[in-house]
Each structure stands twice: as structure tokens, then as C-alpha cells.
Image 1 (cartoon, rainbow, N blue to C red):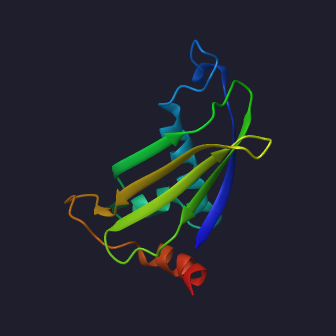
Image 2: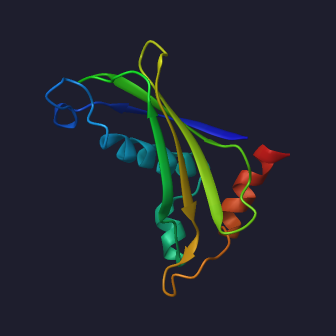
Image 3: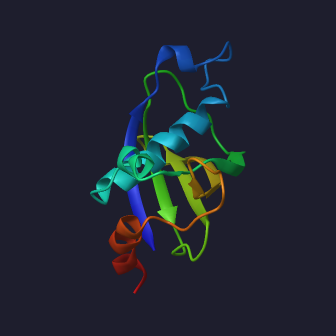
Length: 136
């Protein structure tokens, strides 16, 4: 299993009238976690796009357990439980507050697509090589 952690501080604009993080912001938090997890492998989403591969989201699920508030320091844990074998990659993500309490869990499915044709394609070889050691 591959796992990484990214910290995000809640900005005032991300909260609603109830003084909690608006639920739609979790999609962005999850994205930051995914992009930074790739960066922690020594690869970047930008370099993947330069090779002609994009990763659109095709499915996203969230379960909200506890609220986050303005100025909270959140930890987004991003996990790959399985090494992708085809065009599909599934991330499992969790958001924790500074006390280590689990706030939100999510699952995000993306496809590897050829940027020009939008046809399904395989994970870039360089990314696969960096992930494989975590699944042996």
C-alpha cells in the first residue's frame, strides 16, 4: 500500500455560515492530497500531463463524520490500496484534525486518458516504477 500525508490550513473563505468547512471544499482538499502524494514519489502531475496523459475524476464519494473549522490544520491522508493494472486508479482519502480525530473519508476514482484522443490508457511507466516498491 502507498500512503502519504499532506497538511492544509483551513482558510476563512472555505467556511460557511455554520462556521464549518463547506462540504464542496473537500474535493479540493482531496485533490491537493493526490497531487502532493505523486510529488512525494518524485513525480509530478504536471510532468505526467507533459507526456500526454491526463487523469479526470470519474467517481467521488465522501462521508462527513465531524466538522472542520476556520484555521484548523488538517492532515489529508492519501492511500493507494492497490497498484493500478489498467486505466483506472482508486484513491482512498481521510482528513484528520490536529487532535488526530477523523473528520472525513473519501474514495476517488480517476482514469488515465490520452490527452489528445481522450481514449483510456495505462499509467505512465515512470509513475508505475515509483509505486511498485510499495506493493511488493
